[in-house]
Structure formats: structure tokens, C-alpha cells
Length: 111
Length: 115
Image (tube, rainbow over all chains, first blue to last red):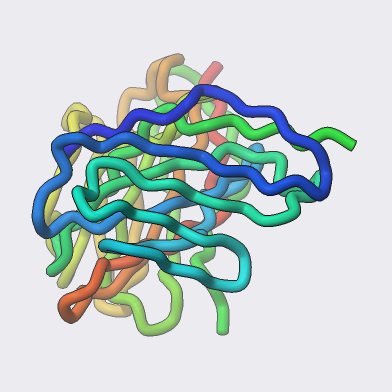
């Protein structure tokens, strides 16, 4: 599976918009892009998933350019409870999907 | 609708012992994957079970084995425990997609400490 690259850490303040960019230059045609959030000592929680263009749900937006070599997770108006590790992953469809996690991005939201 | 559940939540073992961890998948899911997460690192894929068979395996030794039951629940067994096996063990469930990504949903994990 293709590798992803994310910033190791980011800092933000309550109420700000946070954008976390993930690079995946060798993404395969059938790869989807998925983001997970993880709090300490808990299992990762699915945030959002997309294949191309823009996807939005109640908690985040995912922007994917036409070449799909990167993606950006956008968290609007973060709060202290958004402090967590965020993982960007690639995976194919149709089963046999093992998730390859990198080190993730540690987001710290400050008051 | 219950999500993925795991038991026990915490476990302490000594080197050389054997351990069994259990996972019940989310309702409607038939595929179970197991991951090991060492402190400060991302989860690492151990193996995946579907239709009671192991269909994918990560880079883990044979000391790590598993089983899936007819009700789709699963067990992870680790033999001859080493200090380095201390980690959070995560179970994730999913169901084969139909042209879209097979989203995996994680349980809360089992924290294993090997002394």
C-alpha cells in the first residue's frame, strides 16, 4: 500500500479552523483516502473518507485535488476536545483492506 | 446498536505466559481485523479474519494467532509473551464494501502489560 506523509504535530487555538495536509504521491487508482481520530488509550475513530474532490460531513471536510497526490482534512472551529492524533490512510475497495497507519499528526488545541 | 466491544480492558501477564483477547464486531459486520499499538506509535496490522479464516496477515510472528467464530466474534492469542508485546491491542470490524471503501470501526482496545 502507498505511504502517506503528514506533519508530526500542529498547534491551534479554540475557534480556529485547522487544516491537516497528507501527501500520498503514489496513491493507486482504487485507493480511497480515510482519516481517523484517536484519543489516548482509545481506538481510532473514523472521521471522513473520500476518493476525489470534496467531501463534507457533520464534523469535517476533506479536500482532494484532481491529481489525488495529497488531501487536506479541515476541522472547522476546533475546541479543546479536538486535541488528538489524526491519521491519514489509503486503502483499496473490494475487501482485503488492511489499514496501514503512519505516525499521525498530533493536534494540540489551546484555550 | 452496539459498536465493537473488546475484553478484557486491561491485562497484566508475565514473560512466557499466554494470553487470549476477545472481540465482538459491530452489528452487521462479518470481518474482524486486529492491530497492535505500541505507546506513541500508530496501530500496526496483525491479521484479518473473514468467514472464520485468516485472509491477510501483517509482519507478526507465529506466536500471534487468531480465530473467528460463526457469530463473527474473534479471539487473538499470543503465546510465549515477551516484554515487547506490551501494547494496546485493537480490534476493528467491517463488512465487504460494494464498490466503496470498506470502513473499519475500532473497539476501545485491550491494554496488555507484560512484566
